[in-house]
Image 1 (cartoon, rainbow, N blue to C red):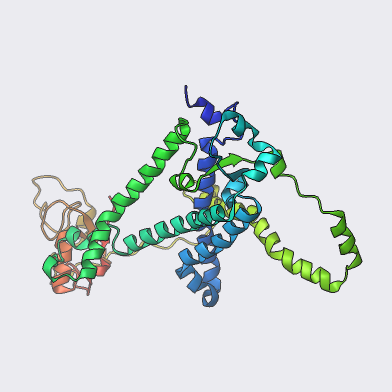
Image 2 (image 1 turned 120 degrees about the vertical axis):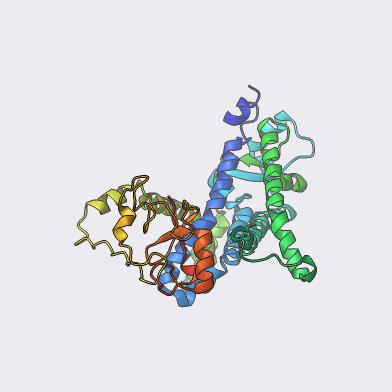
Length: 393
């Protein structure tokens, strides 16, 4: 097929990355934020005084951290953090590109001419940090507004406000709740169209902003892995002026670069650590089986169900009727509690909802009852609407 060469790499252009390499480096970048947030949340439980504010402002903190990381990698390697991890780099695409020029892009002469300039590096940094930050803040704000779900309309208890009485801010919020899902879907389809075009070799850019900047992504060549050899004059001056002050100054200047380079190993390890914990504590993990085999002490007895109050809707009927199978036409068929029947409407349970007293009703019936009388209709214990719990059956 036509796109097989793009999947496995083109023989006439060995430095063109496949679509899988580009997708994987984006997935690595997308997994960094939840991994960092999880690590900060764990440490924030022990040191809330210092880390709780950072966790609450995680999007801003993550954008600031990635700003310095991406700037370092763009200056030193000419690529983003994830691209450098997968052996990719960015280059200024030549005005007239031919297959022969693309194949020779791995040579040192071509590599020096195609290095990113200051303008391309700044634009790359803007898109690498700005777009994920804007999307994260927009999604977070959309979820704060309810995520497109109007709880009052679902429950049928909160009347809709008149559009004429709403303020301009309320109208803008309602408009944002409607527009955001469509805008996010359109953005994803736009990105997917560029992926498909790159897969079928219709465009050399897998992202539209790369086309705007005139930058494409290539595989690193042998000269990109070679460390520049220090000059002899530098060695002589270093040996002649080797003292404590010079060593300390050199250490201070090299420490930030060393720390940023070490993140190439630490950040992927943090992702692996988070994914390992998700697997270990999943329902099908060995941790569940080992925990089930251990002795957890004596089993707690099953809590006793409260008996109906004599003035309640069931009177003094014994609770064992609830668990007893009844036959049609029997004399006690309509007496007391019956399995799957709501005590209020005497019909089948619709959207079963339980109270802390242990009795189950239809959601609509018990919500209206508790909202009106603020008590359990069977046991007459004080209840509130926030105590209702849905039963998944």
